[in-house]
Length: 77
Image 1 (cartoon, helix red, strand yellow):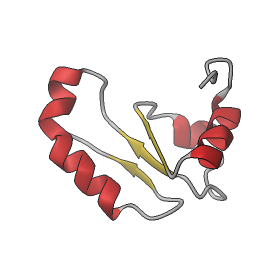
Image 2 (tube, helix red, strand yellow):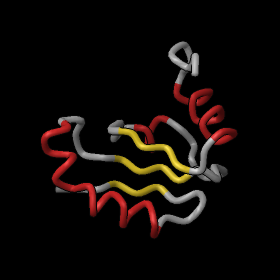
Image 3 (cartoon, helix red, strand yellow):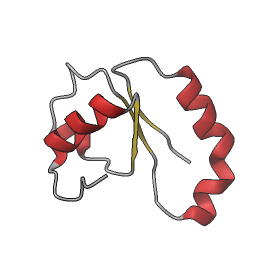
Image 4 (cartoon, one colour):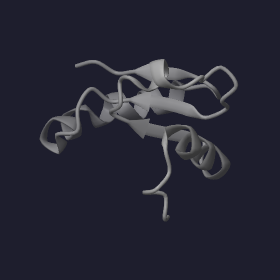
């Protein structure tokens, strides 16, 4: 999408304009950005290792289904 040059704040704005959900592994995002006015659901996964992430697909799907606009949620496993 050509977003590799965007910084966190601009990336979140671009994502918010195109999507309802933003999945990341950046646990510091909530400390680096003001998320109060965001409509975007932000879901933070604890790691990027696909071998582990794929074991938790059901938990991720449940978190996405239960999420409300503007919600910030961190998964832990």
